[in-house]
Image (cartoon, rainbow, N blue to C red):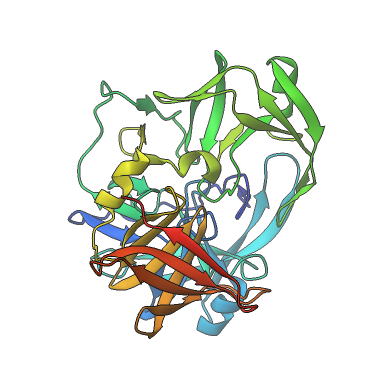
Length: 377
């Protein structure tokens, strides 16, 4: 019998699994996450080759491989599945056997099956790892620290911020408190959005400024969104959002929680015990948890830009954008983005005070314009 899966890779929904990966064990490790696309992207090797860029998507409980990459490996096709989104969208996808999927700098290596989708046609990524990929390990998505933390252990259901996951091996759903109404919601790290709610809720909630948005398109469906501001509070665990912007989506059966909300949270998932924990992270503490530091790292421009080190390389982060800084000479650097950009990126020059301490940086544009950003104390 052909199985039905749910898919909204790169947007708002979920993929249902056709297989469960084998159990894994590992010591606590921190895996760097690239958040520049508003989705957590990590390095993955396949049969010893790579690394390749994979989204760790809690909106997916199956694993997905780009179709061109699958052809390069010439993987064996073992079946096909009908992929289905919230609503009525469907896409038939081949399923291939992948002998060895590994995470660099860890002892995690498994054989699994993956559905084939044209991912590179939508984003510069090579695949998707499901929310359940890491088995019984405790998985922490530390968005402010740009890292995925894996560890043995379990959550304590009596602890503040811990809420139960709705029993369903195929989806990471829980009850979200939307202005006092319990709404089944899906944590979707593959979504760049925020609070996306089922359309029917617009008549049950106090809202203002309802307006029609541009159509949402996914590989298998299209949706009509309606934007509004909620008059009330949404609670994610113990974290409260007062009068947040929301999107009502025609065809959605349950709510979705995406990047614009979880980017300020540290979220821990305990699949084995069906628990999830949401913690609000103070922006002032982000630099302390970033790990490696040098004289350039820290916040600039009133907490707008963050300079940090990752594996010895210097990066600049502003909102979802993360750009690598490569030294040209002395204090002058060029910015490098992982995707092609329409306009030339400005160069960056670090400035020092009379005591030779770094006190800011200057952006130097192609037209000769310069813009100074002071380093925060």
